[in-house]
Structures are given as structure tokens and as C-alpha cells.
Amino acid sequence: MNILLKLASPLFVIPLIVSGCTSSSGNTQNVISPNPSKCPDKSDAVLDAKKVKTINLSTQKITESGIVNQDKSVGYVFEAQAGQKLVYNTIQKVCISVYTPDNQLLNSGVLPITGKYTVQIAIPQGSTTFDLAMNLETQSTPSVPSPTVTPTTVNPPLVTTPPSVSPSPTPTNTFISRPLPTKLIEDYFAEINNDQYRNAWNILPVELQEDKKLHPNGYDSFLEWYKGKVDFINIHNISLVESNQNSATVKMKSTYDMKSGKKAPVNLKFYMIWNKSKQKWDISETKVID
Image (tube, rainbow, N blue to C red):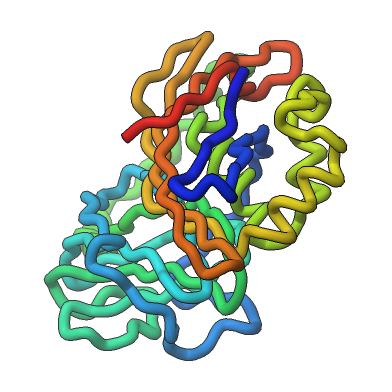
């Protein structure tokens, strides 16, 4: 499998390899839950209009995934009614801010006015992927009970024995959700951008680690390239082209910021297969696209 990308300059050859990922879950939080201790009161990261996605929120929970770094944040816009409550769930160490339709920072659990709200996800330093589950809760108005009329004649109470009911067995859900194919690519490049080179290397398949065309000197070649020549990898877009039980195809658009000062646009298509024994996605082929 040839996954070397030659840049316009003959001096650069970029080995582009991605790896597996893990999944996790967390407890539900609302908008008044504390962010990480290092989060500022208001994020300084730029919220690019291209990074703001309009979503439809209801009582049904949805999950959004993405990548943030210290310079650029990600945003989601949704419409809500006054009195509704925003609930979100994430375990990643990211900073989450919610802004009202009049651009005020929300500091309570209940949405004060009707209109469009903005959720901003940022990180104080470095780069990371995130999974954010969100939904709205509607405050229900308690009903007023009708007055009870006491009869003048009191009859002795009739005592009845309710029939015994055997509880139905609780069904066991044996389905295990798969990680998204796109998450595999997000996690690998996040390890590179966070200088976790050994972690990134360890999650590569053995076949790729031992490929002499990609890594003539094994891990030393891998480290020489990413630590010595690449400054940062900007991921612009990762999208799922198609997916089924056995295979998936993912497209990625990115730019390599080299330590020499040059910028190299890199667009790739990843072909993946599902590893049933290890319950993870593996890359079978990578192609350079326009």
C-alpha cells in the first residue's frame, strides 16, 4: 500500500498514515456545569463562520463530533423557546460556552428568550477531538388537582387483594456500537498535533510500521519526519463517503504547516475494513485526491 504523498517541492515527502481509536461515555451536564479549570470566562479562540453548523435540537439527543485547537473553535447554532433547558454531555477536556440570541453569555440552566443560540467549543492549548451530545428539555407546568368532596355518609372500606403480577424479564441489549470511521482519522492526527508521537506510532498496524518504504528506520524515521519537519497539521474537513458492516470510505482535506515555513495542501481518501476480532477500523488503502 503506497501512502506516500510527494509535495510540489522535491525536498518533501509526507507519510500519511492514520490509526485506530477508542470510545468513551460520560454523565449528562447542563449549561451551568463547570468547564475545565483552565477555561477562561470567555474564549479567545476565533470562531470562523465556516466552522459554525446549524443543528435542529429537540428532546431527542444528537451527537456532534469535531476537532478544535487553541486558535480556532467550533460552533453550533440551534433555535429554542424561552423556558427550555439545554443539556449536553461530553468527557473531553474542552471549554463550552453558550450565547443567547442577543450575544450574551448564558450563565443559567434555563434559556431566557426565544431565538437562535450558539454553542462554542474551544480549548486553551493544543488540539483535540470531541464528541458532544446535546438535547433540549421542556419545563412542564404542574397540573392543579381538583378539590375533593367528602360524602356525608361514610361506608366501610372495601378491602381487595390485588392479583400477583410476575415482573417481566428485562431484555439484555448485546449490541455494541462501533466507532465512527471518521473518528479513527481524527484521533490519529490529534496525537501528532499534541506531540504524542509514540502513542501515534503504537496504534499503527504492524504491517505499516514494518513497511521499509514508509519507515526505513522504523520509529526513528517516523519521529524524524513528524517531530523534525512538520509543525502542525490543520484538518479542514473529514467526511464519511460511504459505510457498511465490512468497509468504509472517508475523505479528508488538510494543510501541513512545515517548520520551513511552507504550507502543503493534502487531500486524501481512506479505504477501511472492519476488524471484527479487535472491534476497530483498519486502513486498507489510501489515495491522494484533488
